Amino acid sequence: MVTGPIQQPSVVPTAVRPPAARRPAGDLPALSRALAVPPGEPHWRDWVIRQLAPVRRGFAEHVRLTEGPAGLYAELLVQAPRLHRGVRLLAGEHVAIIVALAELQHAVERPGVRAEELRRRTDELLDALAQHRQRGADLLWEAYQTDLGGET
Image: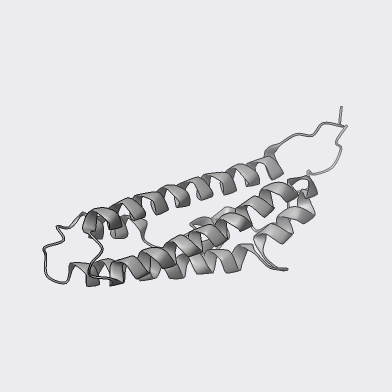
C-alpha cells in the first residue's frame, strides 16, 4: 500500500522540454508547402532548400538532446532499463533520418532531379519522421505510464 507521495520521474516533463526534444525536426509543413509549389516557379529549388535547412537543424538538435550521456534516452534508461531495445531502435532511426535528409538536400541541389522524385523522397522522409515521433512517444508512455504491478 502506498502511504506517501508517488515519485515522479526525474525526466523533465515534455511541457518544459525544449521544442526540439518534443518535435524531431524543424518546420515540416513549410517544407511540404515548398514542394507543393509548381517547380516552374522562379527560384523554386532555392525555396525548397531554404525550407529544408531548418528541418535538418531541428533534427540535429533533437538528436543532440536525446542521445549522449546527458540526453533524454540516458535518463529514460535510468527510469526504465527494460526499454533499452526501444531506445537503441530510436537512435538507429536517427542515423537513417539524417542520411535521408542529406540525400534529399543533395537531390534538391541537383537541377536534373525531377520535382516528382523530390516530392516522393520528401513524402518518405515525412513518413519516417512521423513514425519516429510516434515511436518516441510510445516509448515514453511505456516508461512512465505502464504499471508493472507489485503493489497491492
